[in-house]
Amino acid sequence: MSAPNNSFDPVEVTALHPDEVARMREEALAAIAAAGDLARLKEVRLAHAGDRSPLALANREIGALPPAARSEAGKRVGGARRDVSEALKRRQAELEEERDARVLVEEAVDVTLPWDRRHRGARHPLTTVAERMADIFVGMGFEVAEGPEVEAEWFNFDALNFLPDHPARTMQDTFFVESAAGGDSGLVLRTHTSPVQVRALLGRELPVYVVAPGRTFRTDELDATHSPVFHQLEGMVVDEGITMAHLRGAIDAFVSGMFGSGLRTRFRPSYFPFTEPSAEVDMECFVCRGASVGDPDAPCRTCGSEGWIEIGGCGVMNPRVLVAAGVDPERYSGWAFGLGVERTLMFAHGVRDMHDMVEGDVRFTSAFGMEI
Ligand code: DAH
Image (tube, rainbow, N blue to C red):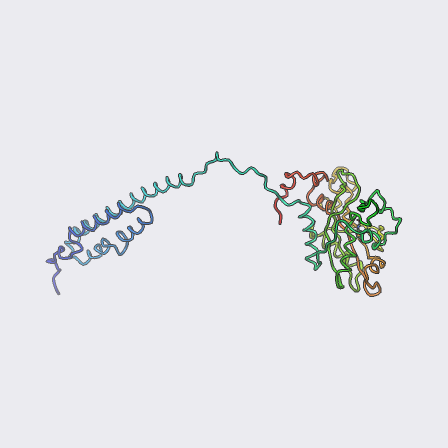
């Protein structure tokens, strides 16, 4: 058996020589002091205190020394590593403090600077509601159609089976457009969107599934529930084998899409010259769902405790309209409806007064945000 290697001289291991350890320590401390930012300090830490740094490698050599020499070498290398680690900690704290101070200055916000006081606009809620209404039908495969606001009397009335002496034609309801010579021009401001039915049929191949949102005009005084300018959404289907059941289904889908699912609808018999049979469409009140009817303790403001809300008119297209539009009523049938956009906005968003919709106060439109 060989004797312990007591004669081994630690000074022979170059990395553990006191001068060498002192040099490694000085080099590390100088690099730490010179690190100008945290990123650089990170590199210095890796180079001088990492697993492969000169001092770490020297530390590994200690195990190879004879036991008697290990303690002294251990103290020397350990002391140097401790100094380096403390210097790193101090420099880290200094650099972090510098960075925080700099961020405070660089990212300071001057709250006294003037800001942009101009009001940001928003689309008018009537526009967005009309678009949402039309979108529900587009989702069912309908196309969007358009017609002019200044309309031929023939499209607005005659083609829709209004006889010449129909009261809707009289001066009370209709804005007639004067000709340049001062006489009758044959033009009116359209009193409803229904003339788009005839235009859509004349301009398209059958079958036709269209909705037509648009502006309409009647000689009404502006009050809480009336306006001389208002909006409707017309809908029309002309195809083979079309029945009132399809109409009911489309209206139900609209009500669920606009006001929420599970609301009942009902048709009340009515009269329009261009439909036969004709109906007024009601939907169940989406607020009280009928609970307010006959209950004076829980009145409903939305439906006036009626339980039902009227949303428009509809019916099976009168064959005379189909004939006026060049469609064979023996082969094709159809239905149509007209929904009030202002009424829908009133109910959907709790707008109580028509004045708010027409006065153009930007605070009203802004409240509805920038719906796209
Ligand atoms: N045009 C009608 C109005 O302004 C509303 C209407 C009723 C439209 C029945 C229709 C319909 O298409 O079928 O009062």
